[in-house]
Image (tube, rainbow, N blue to C red; front, side, top):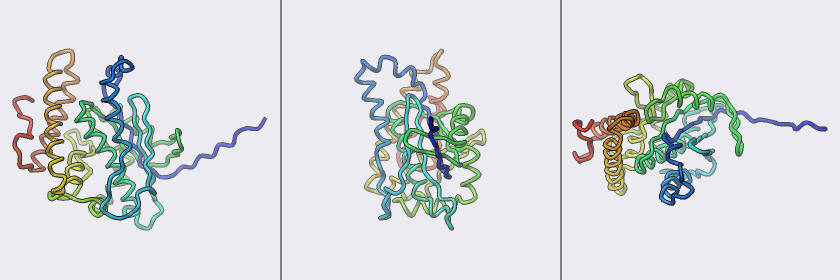
Length: 275
């Protein structure tokens, strides 16, 4: 009897693992609840979209591997570490990866879901339904043990890889996206506990910063604000305090962003008395 010859192709990849918080409670009875089914479909369908890059470069060469099962979502893109200029060579796949993650988080906020996760870097084998490698394990572990709040953090492996090239990364991102009027698209944000997480509100608002899309940004921020306020009120009593704390963190991040972004609409900010 012949033994199957398995050959794994490991390559440098950036891998994200994302958890939909409260999913086990949400899916109860979903088979008979059309509204729940529609809500979940609208959340996950954003993963099928592809952004329009500023350049004419074909994005089909930089496919993002996306899998989701139950409450877990994984995304991964290759990194050409052998390139003479790795940052320039990898700007498009990284841009697409961050675009997908930001779009997913924005859609989750609009629909009332909370996401938590981690992004790691290293050798991975990714093929159809197989994902094998240390970055995936690191991202799963950090989502569970380190992320805590509804944020997608950068694992140590990714920080060590990208931080020496952060200015180059921003420059390459700007060349490929229609950048808004308020400065560069910085993917890193440092939280009060010293952990870096993906600043998806800034990413979304900057990449949608043209005058044509500005109204969409304002409408999206208003929708997110109303959803946060509704959830804060809903979970303000025990035994839901842990859930309330997660929305409190989201509200604080939202307010910090609004203040820094300097949007000319004071109604966007969530009043401190509510927090």
